Image (cartoon, rainbow, N blue to C red; front, top):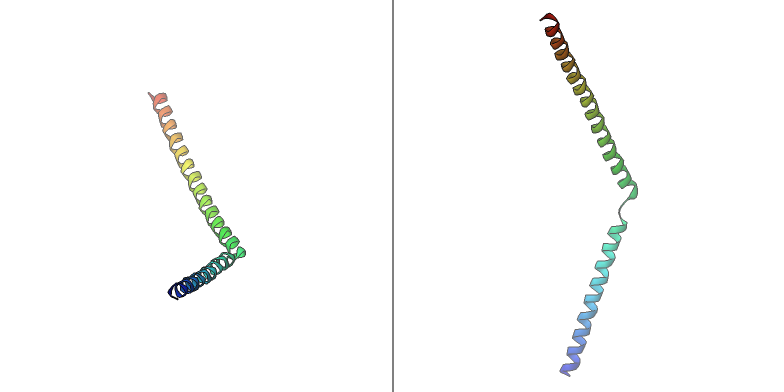
Length: 87
């Protein structure tokens, strides 16, 4: 009798664990399907626009810095030429 009750107890415990595992796996699989593709697309577009804006700002700053550096070199070259001519 003890062995019979032990076997029934083990079987019942295994059934409960199997049921819990099944419920947990279904909840996890449903969470994976809850991802909204349109929301992901929108987030990606927003991030891409943000990166484009940053890149445009950097390009403008770089162009400005390059122009300033070119003008500084040009001014130094003119000074050097004027100093050589006047010497």
